[in-house]
Image 1 (tube, rainbow, N blue to C red):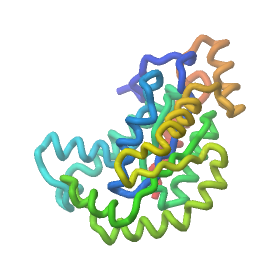
Image 2 (cartoon, rainbow, N blue to C red; image 1 turned 45 degrees about the horizontal axis):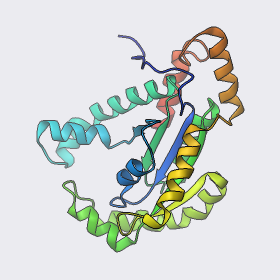
Image 3 (cartoon, rainbow, N blue to C red; image 1 turned 180 degrees about the vertical axis):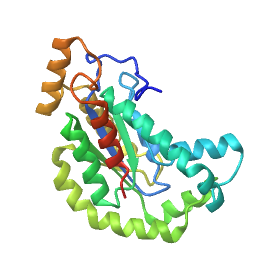
Length: 239
């Protein structure tokens, strides 16, 4: 079995070496924001630790609980890691979907991407705590309100830090009304400009030049070994 299933992309494509970290509570509407801030010219891959698990639940027509997590959790982690390796190896644009309550994990993941050439950005989705709880409870896969409250508290403490960390590449969206019309144009324009602009990270520019000179399309094996890509993927998912 090969280490990577290569994705047919070109180093000339828009969006390579670009990653947006999407921060928001469960029920904040991050998926809606993703749909609204891209125009189809660039198609970022979505990195979400729950994505494969939810797919397996739906495929097997079962609900989320401790037993199904024990059954499908390890499989979903393997799927997630394989997808991420492919995305990184192909330098694909990404939306990294999460709460950003864990600053250590976010710094580790953004650092991994930046170390191989990615520009990074954060879209912070604002929503009132009560509204987030209401929406989360309306979902098929419900989230414990106490968990949402804890995450909300952690996120509020982290917000100023992320503003400083991402600087001009930190933008906020108000999604309390589930449409964020007041900021939609600004957010849409900023996100699209980010994805379609030239790579700013000097490591990314250097790697693009190397690939253009060699005629290769992937980071491995021309720039990094497959073992190295596997290693940084494993570090991404460390607790």
